[in-house]
Length: 184
Ligand code: CO
Image (cartoon, rainbow, N blue to C red; front, side, top):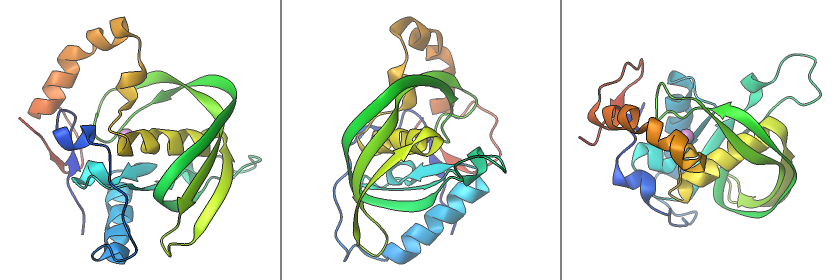
């Protein structure tokens, strides 16, 4: 099943997600549906609040952000109840976008490396370090389950310049080739 993507302006995107247990209803199917939804919209990550569920679950597939011959290959993974333990390395900028905020891409500064504690889809616990693009995608999706969006990282002036565009997105005045749910 493909979920509609919740658009900017919906309050679910501002909620801090709740932790889930392995008994969460239809978790396996939910994760499969999230991958289908992410692939249909050509995303590299999708967080549960973006499909109207304020829980601490997100998926990523950073493989397409790497080229053949690159040192790293990217990662397709499920993250449940994650905690960022540390963020290290240099701070670098990259032009990010978000399925909930179509048509806007802006430079966001983030740390190069993160250490994360999380559970996978089988509720096996991991403590791992990630770097580069994969770390960036994880940081972006992690923000979602904390009720944060990439535009929150922008300087106030930059953000106020985007105000009109963001307002339009929340009203559905935007061209997008995947299904979305607009709050207004
Ligand atoms: Co996003």
